[in-house]
Length: 291
Image 1 (cartoon, rainbow, N blue to C red):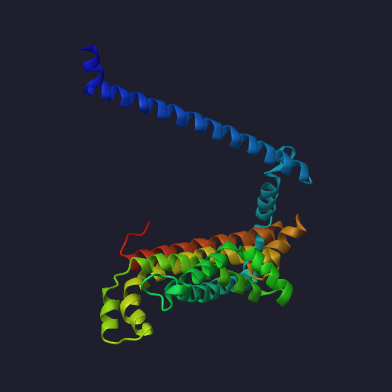
Image 2 (image 1 turned 30 degrees about the horizontal axis):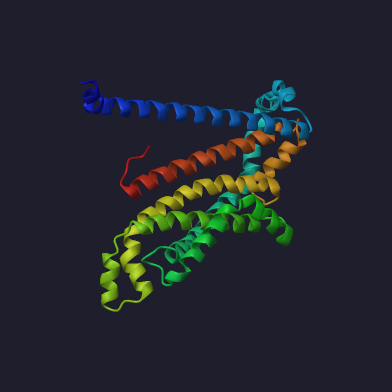
């Protein structure tokens, strides 16, 4: 009877439960070992960085709020000058917004081409799909600031290097996103147009774009938000715009903190406005609700 019970349903359930508990124990052991390795790597990396820093992070932690406190106190003491500073730097803000707009437009157009050439079932040259996908990966992998630094060395400082750098990175990012949108498109209109002799451009224009354009615009607006921030950051490396003015104000330190505060305020308001307009438009295009 004991053998029959052991080999019956109850015994099978017991074996499954024992195997499951053993698997859970192994996973816990592996997770613990990975956690220990991660902590050791983190501590080792932190110590290496700490040794190479000009000043120690732990020693500087008590002073981490000194700069924001000095900036806010000086800006408040000279708050009557903020409107004048805002008017002075408004032109640089427009330059930053123009860089973001142009780079988003050019990058999205290039991303559309990369997406069409790298989507199975839509590409005019299927054998070249891996080439265009790797090209998109390359554009997306290189940070904007690296491209901008190379272009500044070649072209000199100004908004043009920033625009080209952001457009290249945008092309890679949009090429990936647009390709995923294309893969979800219905190919029956394309097949119907091909059956009546339509050219490739006609099949894309009449069969694909009506389906994907709302998502294209949605991703384009989302990318515009990112590019406004990126164009401001590139100003720190001499690419013009409001980031360049912010770097100059911060470099001088005390005495021009009120000017730096006005630039921060302009940049914050611009990002909020662009975010709200973009969110509302994207919700309208995709038929969703505004968050």
